[in-house]
Length: 234
Image (cartoon, rainbow, N blue to C red; front, side, top):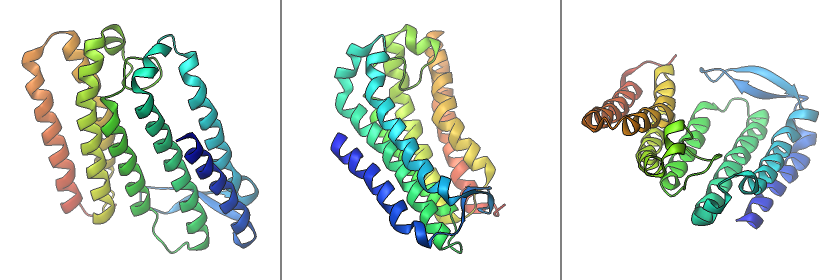
């Protein structure tokens, strides 16, 4: 995975170098919810910003285990940690290539591409969250998961489902072209908010309330998908 990540980073720099002469002087770097560009950056900065940022991420990912008091745990999910690193590097590389492409083809809508990328990252994270062992840098790090390994494991199994469902709904959003803010915010809450509530209920041993958390997961996911189908674009 390390070699693959380095190849991806090299391709980011190579793509920027090859396309640099053809790119406009200012490149889009931010879009609003309607997919309209609302911020630009000189190409002398923007072409290299994402590749340099990914290099920093790559270095940070390599040293995180040595900084963690629970560094021995990383051996228990070494493969999953490598895949997660590759997922993040791949996601930012994807964003880099999108920005370069849209700078040359401004008529292409960005929102479907963004939602496919974000949804895919959510699904990838969801598939491996349950394998992550207790640590201080990766995962759902709240007082209740850090204090109790059983709470950590159960919370991350639940979070896996939340991330996968949020990812599926986010990708669906790309194909229905609505981009309703409530769906976006709902996806964020589904992926991060519900697992935190779940962890707290485990801590309080409120097992009788767990069924409501699962019900909330189903209702929220169904509601988001319904909005994808029936809410007009914003």
